[in-house]
Image 1 (tube, one colour):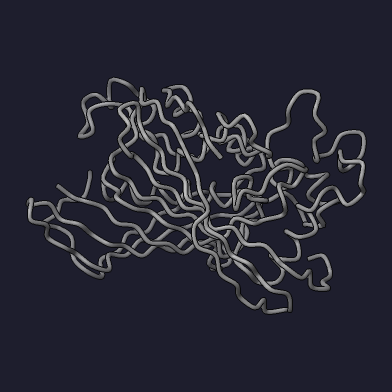
Image 2: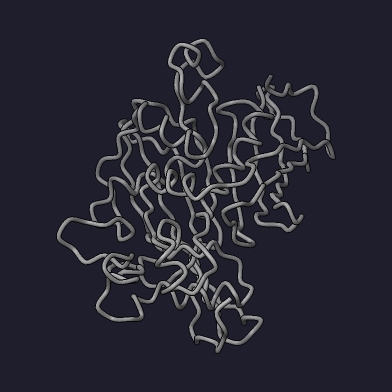
Length: 140
Length: 195
């Protein structure tokens, strides 16, 4: 159930398992849906033999997309007013990602709605940060 | 980049939602979405990235009859063994500790053409939502360069960051989403072992 404005307070956080054992196939699925077919993400031969990486790796935008569910499941659908992410480290096939969003500020608005500002972190199974971000949402 | 027509379609939203592992009925189920707070199918927050599908010049999509820098008969489809600049510079910039997903930013900084799209990396992405994006919307996107700045890399080389701002307007000319991509590229390639 979506978060209600009267329930939010600064410091409160929400954590969720975002993806377990990320597959190359899901990365390819994202390539197909988004249209970004960069061989660094879709072509193990290119990624390893030409680009010198240990394997293909996820689009930053896949990690940001996966992390978005953390926000919308908690805050409610269609309520985000902004969402930003920095891609801090690469996400590899086999990674398991966990996200955490924390309420940093709560602003009551003149129209009776409430705007919340959040800080976001997504970490892998080694507890390494892969994404940091911020978001804001308007709760009716 | 300019996208003349980016139709936001239910089927495309379904594929995108599946790809990000989010089967929220508000993206995938017309009836359930109709009964929800938003009243119909909306698109996930990062969906406008899929506008690349409607950019005829988008460099990170293979095109019939055009050389592609991914593997085929050889590990890189390009005649040059370097395979365009995407591989080498991505590798260097990311091992340099700069944030990045290693994507050669197809639309970053206007990087265009050539296999790797110029070797930029996607360091950061920001969205501002003016209203939820709905199935049935028809968007038009136009982009322009934003701020740019430099930073010294941890292992040598100058990192050049550049913003690229895309505005998505709907069928009524109203602004729906503003997206800012921050690309980064290494100006001087540091000597670095492949990681």
